[in-house]
Image (tube, rainbow, N blue to C red; front, side, top):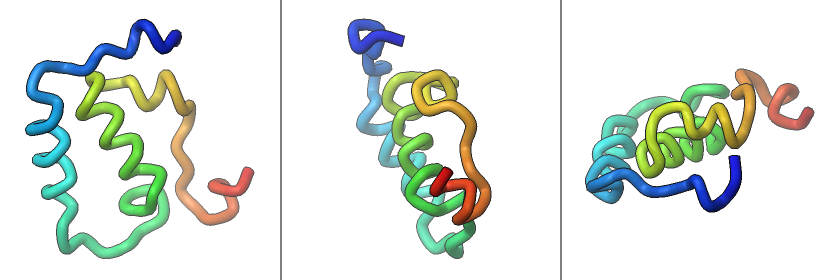
Length: 68
């Protein structure tokens, strides 16, 4: 994916806020509420579903996998 193809969705700021608010109060869990999934959630909220997978590849589910 090139930078030129990253076009934000309409109302991306609202979508991002809603997505992040949905996690308020959730406990920390690797692969679900650590920094990686939060970035993925932000990318998909701002640029459309599937963007994070295309840009970042497979998510991790453990501290060890995050370092690989």
